[in-house]
Amino acid sequence: MTTSTIRIDERTRVLVLTGAGISAESGIPTFRGADGLWENHPIEKVASMRGFVDDPILVWRFYSQRRADAKAVAPNAGHHALARLEERLGDRFLLATQNVDGLHTKAGNARVVEMHGTLWKTRCSRCDREPFDDEEVYLGDLPGCGACAKRGESALLRPHIVWFGERLDPRDLARIDAFVRASRGSRLVFLAVGTSGRVSPASELVVHARDAGAETWLVNLEPSDNQGAFEHVVHGASGAVLPSLFV
Ligand code: BV8
Image (cartoon, rainbow, N blue to C red; front, side, top):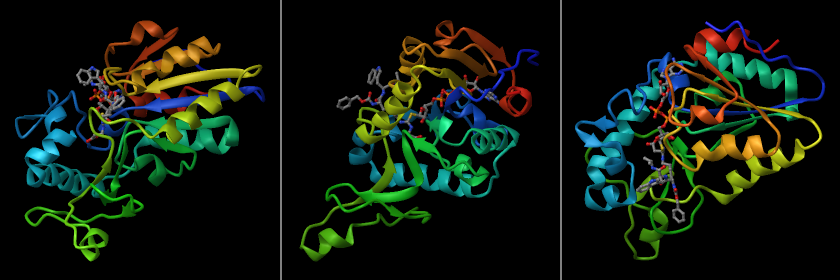
């Protein structure tokens, strides 16, 4: 349990990065918790364009299962603590999440960058129609794009997720970068929560923040790959640590 706390004053701006660990206490398994496997498939295989081309039914089963799991769970104390922090800081707060479960929004955060996409939208794997809200579970029949069909072309719909080997949305990265740049001259705190620091470019955020003069904190259940980059490391469950971390 942490005795260290982060004092907030009128000059403090906070950039938070969350990973699968913050949703673990809501009952959503983390990636590493399952040894990075799903039904004995390496996550990188089912969460990649290659995997989708090779076996779209398997990939839609993987995401449908996660939609079903995520629909049934609620935000936990860690999510609620970050929602309260945004209420307190307003536009001096930004939350970049690697999670696709939507639990930060469900907890009340609005200033959220979903760096790896979201389970709750689907898009065409071919045309550039806007991603649309979708909670459907596709277990057998593969969903096709109606817009493409109208043009006599056939294309599969896909989850609006950033897969391994795919580029993150430059607009998302630009928004995070703009927040860090706007923090020059103020006091910037960078807090990473519940992440193994294994996946880039999210795992590099701490270095960018530190180069911009940020005070860096990691709250994680166990040592992470990049914890050496953080000035302050608190080992503990996010649901137990976050509610009393900011004073
Ligand atoms: C890109 C959506 C470039 C999918 C995700 C070698 C070969 C090929 C590629 C690479 C390579 N080396 C590096 C790469 C790049 C690759 C990468 O980083 N791979 C890793 C595996 C090495 N990155 C990419 O491919 C990215 N794109 O680089 O594009 C490019 C440039 C130009 C042109 C084209 C391309 C895209 C990365 C995004 C992939 N998509 N998610 C989905 O969710 O289905 S990543 C996915 O895995 C998650 O979103 C998350 O980001 C990641 C899992 O990480 P964590 O969130 O940290 O979760 P994890 O389980 O690992 O850790 C949880 C932690 O919480 C643990 O430490 C645990 O102790 C802790 N914990 C548990 N309970 C609690 C807790 N902590 C606190 N409280 C608790 N209660």
